[in-house]
Image 1 (cartoon, helix red, strand yellow):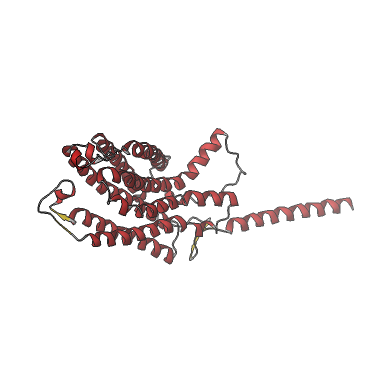
Image 2: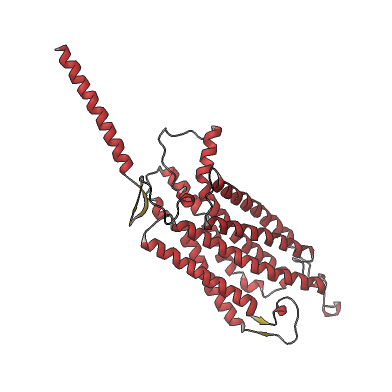
Length: 350
């Protein structure tokens, strides 16, 4: 653009905001994921497929952050009027790789959460719901990859001007985007709210039930962000791509990072309680403790037998009432012995 066409547009610099916000949440995700993996290695090796998936997703987020840093050093976030053509091509190429990495990271995060929840219940409808979510996630993942690599021919038209370029009609891309994103938002909401049905049936205090619900419902923030960024798509791609895509990318990164945080918070509830007990910050409620509901998320497999203190009926994993029945029986026996002792003492007096 030359000055003869009018005054130049104002310059922008959105990259520092992107790097600051996503950097904080990336560090938080790394810390929580590391703690989750460590808790699976001690006192014995207990890593499962959902742990590996969330680990890979976290690594992809770190890669995505450094790709964003590279793009920002070459003008990403500024208006294209103030960036050289060579840097614009480099930034668009890096953004293309960012999108591929993000698609894989968000898919692995959702798959990890769904596979974790599969172990919480043997109920047929529970498993059917989760396997349906997994199937939808896989279909949308392959759909996103298809549009990413086959939308335009040649592929390099995605990051540099090409004279003879052939792309699919824009309306097909928009239709797929709205349908796929709507399904994924619903999936996020279901994954966040589904465990609440089981939590209501646990023999736990109200405070602990609320805590578990809050930990597992953290994923709702990811669903809210996914719904919000859907409304930004039209305005994002209608402006200058070098500057307008930064905030859209920030919300995309926050979506996957909050998903990782939500996936790691619930399994860490039991280890955190043990640490707080050891340092004396959390007072034990009694000598008799029950296995934590969240521990089952990482310590039981789909094919493992149900412990005697649990039931695996059609209502899924529940706290067994057997423990309470045993306690009542023991208390009854103690009371009977005391009464008989009083009778014997009384007979001696007479």
